[in-house]
Amino acid sequence: MIEAAAYTVIAPDVQSADGCRVWAFTVIGSGVVMGARCVVGSHSYIGRETVMGDDVRIQSLVFLPNRTRLGARVFIGPGVVMTDDKHPRVNHPDYDAQPPIIDDDVSIGAGAVILPGIHLYAGCMVGAGAIVTHDVPAGETWAGLPAKRLHRWPTPPIGGGWLTRTRGTP
Ligand SMILES: CC(C)(COP(=O)(O)OP(=O)(O)OC[C@H]1O[C@@H](n2cnc3c(N)ncnc32)[C@H](O)[C@@H]1OP(=O)(O)O)[C@@H](O)C(=O)NCCC(=O)NCCS
Image (cartoon, rainbow, N blue to C red; front, side):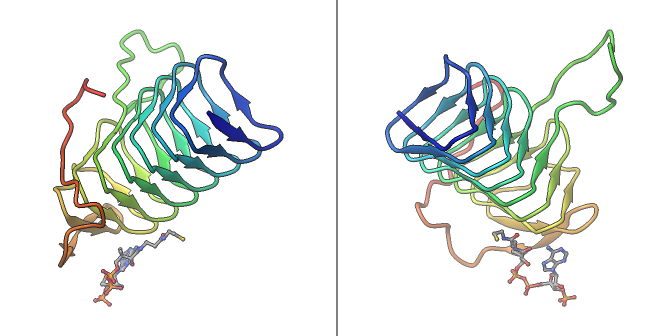
């Protein structure tokens, strides 16, 4: 069940567990699956068949391409853009979308850009304004343009998931 603010567009086949909220002017595409208590801020776009675990927090002005995979307790800061097409061309005959995979307990700072096919492993942190061009290992903090490792978190994240997902599994 989704509690939706005015001016949202939520496809009729979206599935959601209890306690989800979507704020104004956000679009949730066809086939999206939302876990329990997920919150999506205003002016965001959630691509078709995106899957999110429980307790995901997506701030305003976020773009997620089709089939993005989000684990549980993922935090996505305002203005984050994820991508799925490394060499975008209109009507590209060999178009092969590579949505990102975001594991449990990952946090992404404001305005970060995640390039196609990137895997952010469990509990990692991406700094504000980063351009992420390589996978980020579990528990590490990366930032900058292009993003590089700053350090490992001293303690496991709240929730302690540390689970990883592989491409193709929800
Ligand atoms: C990346 C981040 C988690 C690092 O925090 P931290 O571990 O406390 O690191 P520090 O502040 O001690 O900074 C360590 C170094 O990294 C640099 N740094 C910190 N954040 C950075 C960023 N986003 N991009 C580039 N460099 C960054 C600092 O300048 C510092 O460099 P210096 O040692 O040369 O001075 C944090 O700065 C960040 O970007 N958080 C996201 C905030 C956000 O967008 N929140 C959204 C909710 S509003």
